[in-house]
Image (cartoon, rainbow, N blue to C red; front, side, top):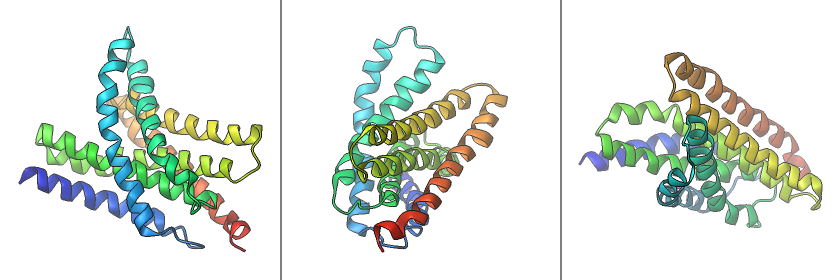
Length: 223
């Protein structure tokens, strides 16, 4: 019963944020079955993270807080989410940068949903799930949304150094935001406030700016 309630709450909050992002795609909205598939793919790679995390923890010695935050957590999770996002990046439906943000955010929210369910099942703490609904869940959406938008922007130009620069920018933003968030969140109270009141809003602001930029360029791709 508790697990079913956790699933419903996690799904409800994630789908609420996903619908808020999808509404910005007003020039040529992505098909919901494909967005739903991206959401499911993001949830599926959570198991990949659970599989690789012990290997990374054993291989990263000494396991400092920074290595734990940026390598064991941020790099591993963003790499798995990028793998889940790859089929949607290559899909013909991804024909403008904003599409990358939609599919990337869907992957991130799917990942956050299953992660929240697993944590709630392990701790029995539904307050933690509700707290994460407006913190870690949004961080995953922002990180993967920025990565997706940057990769889509790179895909849609002639392949050159600029394409690789777009890919690198997306990964740098995703891993940097995710790593800083986890590093400071696990520190003392002052550092936790920095994570929640500076890093998370900054990541969301970057995503919002990128979405606004992409919406402005949508007529170029859909005249």
